[in-house]
Length: 499
Image (cartoon, rainbow, N blue to C red; front, side, top):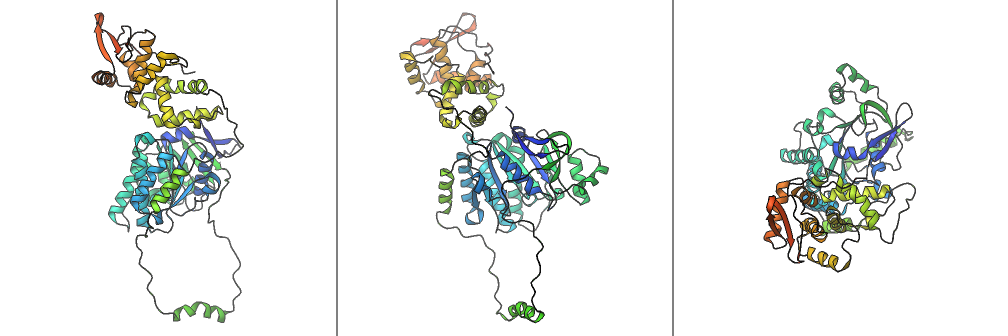
């Protein structure tokens, strides 16, 4: 299933769309000088995708906190929390799939780097069960991944740069999709920028930035001058999620606005010169008081706990636009199983975590106007085990089915899919499943792991393994008194239908 979001229009008037699922796999780099419309582009992207994917915005200027009024993002003021507290909050954000804006406004450059790094590390280090797809937008990325040392402490720069590198280089397998925006490509660390496969390049004037933009888009250096002529709100798009060739697009309108906008010309006050002098020079007669030193902000006791409780109580934002009717069924599982089978039948399903498969399931439910959110992750995990085991509705009805399900509860949860696969074969007197089918039921592509799993289950007394003539295998379920027919361990697994 492909989810394309509307970013604006092309010069011919056609819709300029972005493949959201491709973006989650390939990352995005946005470049444009101040005033080029870069923040407007990010806001359009966030608004259009808010109902499809969880979002985290690293916001150094506090411009994106207004998303909460329309789309339910939780604003986190970094100045009110320690680095350790922010790391814990980030882990809770992933667990509960809440979209948030990390507002770094009011902190100096070094503290912004430290707090952002701690939050990104919390997202990166979350438990594997919570590796849901997550769009991580970092505005002014050159502040957090500088190409050279600056005035901040070296340890703060290294900490921030490492966190940004993890996001862009290693985040994909953890469900993290980085979207980084910068005013100056030349000031952004090359190893961070190089991991993006999608680009939206806006107006820029410095030769070094124009040359890097042209290189990233695969253009000749003599074409780099064109970036001086790009209008505000217009960008050159390239990448698998956008366009196979560099293509100009115009970013569409947005529903929310930043708290601060571009300054507007207003008439000067008509103050007589003598009064004006008194207004400004009166400050010279005030006693000299040294400004308070900049220090790490104090944190109120329990502030992190209160914030994590707020994150826990929050819910994902309601999709924007017209209300979507949901199909409510007395027995929803036949339809939900039909949605789940193609996911299990995907050849790559064995290399994807349960959390990622669950997200895919929810997206497919939404496309069919089915209420998939009624199924939580733990319920989905159990149903996934049944579908992987090839157990159809009604197969476990009756006394024998009740016995089988009761026996499955004695097996570790991650092995229940394999156990139920063996139960199905024994119940229907089918040949013993081969190693390939066992691996598929477990959610792996390793035949060696499948054989080790069977040995582990035999050592635990859950099954008994026997080999008969012709190197064929029989597996018995001692607790149920059932056993499979002889089967070839090397037989290829039947591939579930993907229609």
